Image (cartoon, rainbow, N blue to C red; front, side, top):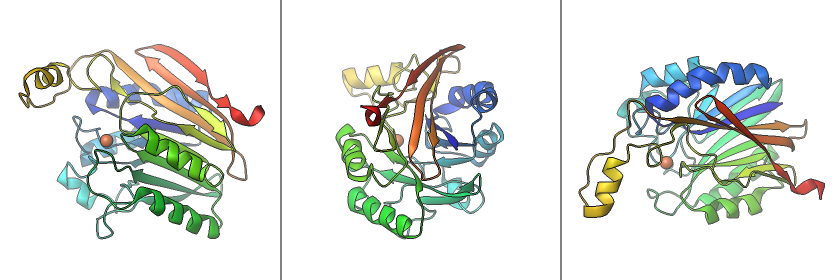
Length: 271
Ligand SMILES: [Fe+2]
């Protein structure tokens, strides 16, 4: 099966880039299922019902979140209605789920969302929690296990990769908005520290640069905004899993406006 993963969709520019390119990418690469991160999709903070329906209408099949999952309060009533998850390690009484179980091409697939510790809201231990959850899923018979690890720290993402690479199909990092060039297949696990944002590429992590520059110079605490018009980027990982849930191929597609740059994963397994 071929699965596509889009990192943080930031604001209207990100949504429009998905609208413009996703349908064509789905057909061209024969993608069976598309996952995306929604937590910045509505003007940088959270997800509205309207934008959720819009993104699902563009060809996204399910979406995961992060530290901004609950910024728009209407999401509290949306988890039962739409294919949305939020990080698994929020306190146990938090609304929504951290796991999405589905079937793709008749095969059971589990998609998980986890949040790191460093600079993040208070959450339960991501490392022991994901280890225990993956063990439980494998005991249930799941072999196709996909993780969106939403974290600031590259080291935390590396830790989860080294800890779980034999047991999960892929670990895709999100949150920093800056894509890293370490897309790798190791022990049948597809890993990248951060997929990178889909949205404005000429600001500061998808936001208009004025506020972050001023805030950094004089601590002004100016409100972050997103440019109405900007140069865009779409960033997507496409990975292929065999019947045992092991990754056999992966690539990163970046679309700068109209221009595509494609990078194949480093295959540690072929050494
Ligand atoms: Fe985030």
